[in-house]
Amino acid sequence: MADVIDTGQFVNFDTDFINFALRHCKTSCFGKESFNLYQWIQKLRSVRDHYGHDHVNVLQLLSKIGELLVKQRHYEFARPFYEEQLRVEKVLLGPNNPELAITLNTIAEICYAQTCYEDAMEYYQCGLNLWRSSNSIKSLTDKSIFARILYNIGKLYNAKRSLEQALYYFKTSISVIKMIQGEFHPDVATLYFDVGTMQMLMGRTNLAMQSFQESLTITQLVFGNSSEKVIETKLQIANIHDARGEHDNALVIYNESLQYMLSTQKIDMQTMATLQKIGQLHHAMGSLDDSVKAYLNLSSISRQILGRRSPYYVFILCILVSIRIQNGEVTKAQSTLQESEVIIKEFQQTSQNDISDEELTLLRDLCHLLCINMFEFAFGAAAA
Image (tube, rainbow, N blue to C red; front, side, top):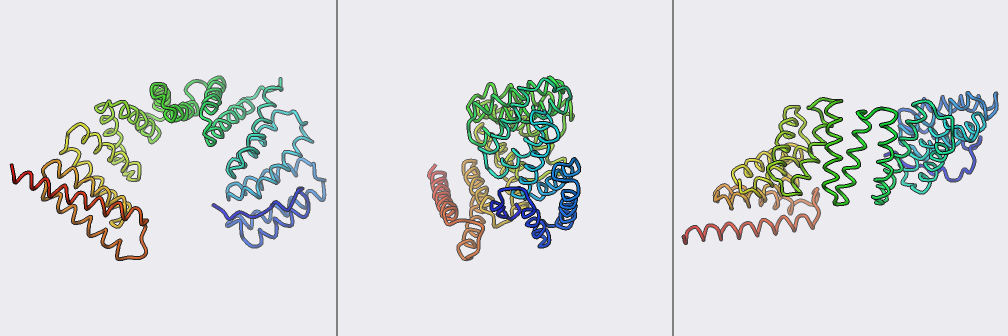
């Protein structure tokens, strides 16, 4: 995220603001685009001086500069340029032209990125009002931007945790996109996925399953059976099966997804989460050997990705100890526990760690508890 620069001292888009932006270009605060931005803003100043502030050439330059600033995530600078673009568009196109919705949506997205949700909603609503009042919307571009505004309002309500309202706008957006792009457009799949996510958060698992299935059908048609988007959707379906206690169905999907990740060498946090789900399900189903195998793979991958001195790696080792004790593998459990204890001692002896005091205390207590469990198991076995 770029450092935020205070532009609030400028009420109007005028020469002082342009000079202010040029000065910051000279300090290279806009990164690799600083030189390009300096050239574009200089040109903007010249064109405004020559043609006036409301010329079509001014409009094109404002748009270009705003786009570059958004790419650099300098939203506090991008917003004034886009707001000036909107003002010029109203002069040139008229205040009720539906093409204004594109710029209104862009400004709203900038406000959203700045977590200025009330400002974002105001711009989105202005865009929607153009849709409702205009009788001249004919092009797919015009219709698509209003579908995007509906979707973005849903995102905004989701960010504010107003899930019912988010669902309403997502579903309305689906209807509009289907009308203009067809039922099997990738955007429809994305929206069904978002709706399913909302429904999961609301505890409506049956409806969520329907939404994810709709998303999966479209995604498979568009991208084929093996793609990251397909896997992402399948994992959500597996999560619902898991939540319902349908462990066999969930396990099939988790294993299919894992095989895809490993085949594409996509080894990341999602791979680890999937392996952990597989280990948990085997444990819940009483398949301790398979659970141990899953957690062994997970410990190897987590060590490879996060490093040996990772709290997550130690936590997985502790889980592995517990399952090995339950499975009667006391010697192997003891060896794994010793490895955990060695790393925890290293944490205690080093001042600079990627672990909080609370996490360290939790892991230390967990190892202590596992040690007690191991002795109890060994004592019980000896007594028997």
